[in-house]
Amino acid sequence: MEEQPEKSIQYATLSLKLARDGKNLREEARALYILADASYFQDKLKEAIGFYLESANVEKELGGKESEGYINRIGDAGYSFYISGQPLEALKYLQESLELSLSIGLDVQAASMYSNIGSIYTEWGDYDKALENDRKALEIDRKIGDPVQVSTDLNNIGKIYEHWGKYDEAIRYYEESLGLARSAGKQSMIAVRLNNLGIVYKAWQKYPEALDFFQQALEIERSQGRMDKIGRRLCNIAATYLSMKQYANCLSYLNQALPIIEESGLPDDLARMYNVFGKYYLSTGKYQYAITFFLKSQEYALKINLKPIQMGNLQSLSEAYEKAGKASLALESFKLFLVIKDSVFSAESNIRLAEFQARFENEKMKLENEVLKKDAKHKWDVYILSGIASFTLVVILLSIILILRLKARNSRQLKQMAEQQAARLELELELRNKELTCNAMSIIKKNETVAGMMEALEKAIREGQPEDVVDSMFEKMRNSDRDNSWKEFEVRFMQVHKDFYDVLNERFPDLTPNERKLCAFLRLNMTTKDIAAITHQSVHSINVARTRLRRKMNLANSEENLINFLINL
Image 1 (cartoon, rainbow, N blue to C red):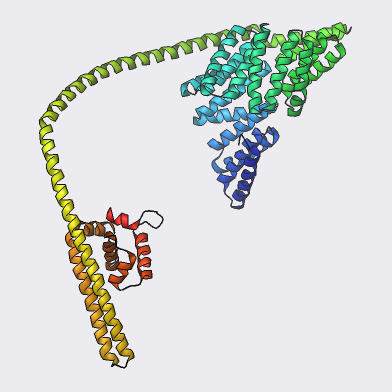
Image 2 (cartoon, rainbow, N blue to C red; image 1 turned 180 degrees about the vertical axis):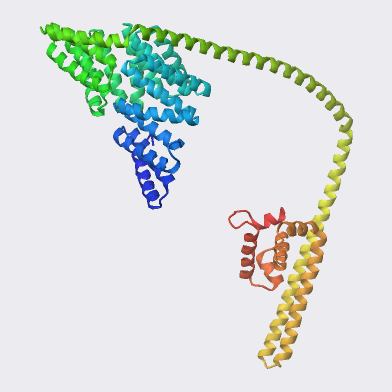
């Protein structure tokens, strides 16, 4: 998905076709969701939005508008609209997702929607609504305990203070947000926080520090190959060099940013870049070029209602028109600047901002106090439990030492007796195994003798002896000898390995008598040839029987040796 999104699209497209052919709505919705995410990672936002909305419609068909799948997908679509520079369309979907999330208790989704809505209002300069939404997002995320989302919320609040011109507060929020992002190891988030710190230091006219933050952010973006973010960082570096009056460096970075940002086509990035171009030409005395770029920037800023950029453009346009000798246009631009400024930085919004700050600090202190109380109680509990555990441990250790001393002598004696008895039993078992094996070999020799007699009888038949008499003798000799051989062997085997048959019958009750015989021979580690001689079967038949036995003992797909398995049984 993230490293090779084109592969993700390839497989998801195939999955989508299979799901639709099989009328599987659940997998169809899932495949569309994957296609949307993969398109998003390729910065194909238009395609991503289409897939998110298609997936949302299928989710609605499956579970209705209050299903989690539908709520999440329209939220994804809303965020993609926002990223693609369509805030009005974004707000519609984000608001719907928020309301549905709150109605069924999807806290994580609700917090995400509050955050996204807050970002839109921040860009619009409607800081009252922005703060209200970001505050609600922060409350939920702190309650959930998600440090990554808390970092995002703090960053968004810092952005409001930055636009407000309250840089000390902005720095405080940005640094706290950066610390959480670093703890989580989120490189893309770290880059954004570094970039925001650079913007504040630039506003403070601390240009070397600002350039350092921007360069750190740019290095991270280049390592991740995020072209749209690279364009933004280059533009910020250009703006910093412009403030330092290093015009050659400014133009160099602007020319690097220009093709990247124009290719991405994002209205907010275009508005900011053209604004910097305008300021560059204004500073170098090329007023008509400056006016052209400020007007281009204003076109995009108006399209997505970026009030901070609008104010910057109008203020700079007023200056450019004045220096170009167009006094009436200069005055008109300045009046528009004041109208927007008054709408954004009103006395009422200042009061709301102060109220929010007080509420935020109070909630933060309450949270910290609760943590301290819990920590103190936990430490006291640990001390008490540690003391009880230590005393109990000492008593137990003393008791164990006394018991061990009393039992040590008896243990040594019992061990010696057990070792001696084990040695005797092992010797006896070895002798009986040898006896049993000798008996088996005797049976083999006897069977070989019988086989010779059978050959002689068969020869007699060929020489003309009466067929019925010879067949009767042949059959009687073979059956009698085979049964007697096995009975003799089985009696001796049972004497030595009685437990073997008990375990065998318990674990494998479905074995046939012939299969139990085969197990006995294999238990003695006899070869296939020897078993064939005892049982009067061919080697092939014995091999087939062994294969069937492995299957019954669930060893068919195992590399375990059958003889070792039976010996260890």
